Amino acid sequence: MSFLRARGNASQVHQLVGMRGLMSDPQGQMIDLPIQSNLREGLSLTEYIISFYGARKGVVDIAVRTSDAKYFTRRLVEVVQNIVVCRTDCGTARGISVSPWNGMMPERIFSQTLIDRVLADDIYMGSRCISTRNQDIRIGLVNRFITFRTQPISIRTPFTCRSTSWICRLCYGRSPTHGNLVDLGEAVGIITG
Image (cartoon, rainbow, N blue to C red):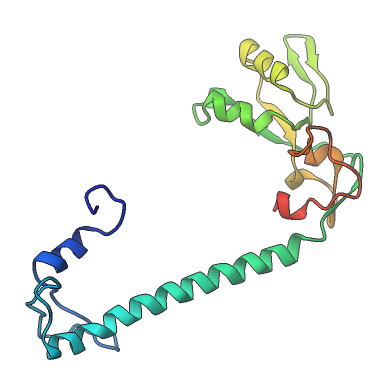
């Protein structure tokens, strides 16, 4: 299982068939007496006493990391749960620019980034306007952007919304639940955050 990376690692295999090696004391210092037995043969009383602190410390560290993650998630939800869609348009002219032609973003990720968003600027191909500001982006429009290799596309996001405590419909974009622009009054803070 260690070689398949399902569970365990090479160090644990060494402890099973080789020797356990050096252990640390409660202050974190290495104990000079190595444990020469392995887990298959069993440990003497002295070796067991030397090694149990490290094992207990591992269990405690995992419990602490888990509780830290739970606390962070709870705090994040408390902060963003009151963010609600209150207007249709905040009037922002800002947007985040995305482009697959700078070598940083594959076309698949580019498409996923654009779909269900709203344009922050008009898109031109030469002197002809192929899409206008505040137009929602669907797969056909994304394919046209990729085919014509237009300039970088500026999209509206919750990060560029001019509001401080709410989000407008156009900056949020389409709802993943029903595919239409998000409804007024919908609490989108947890999804957005």
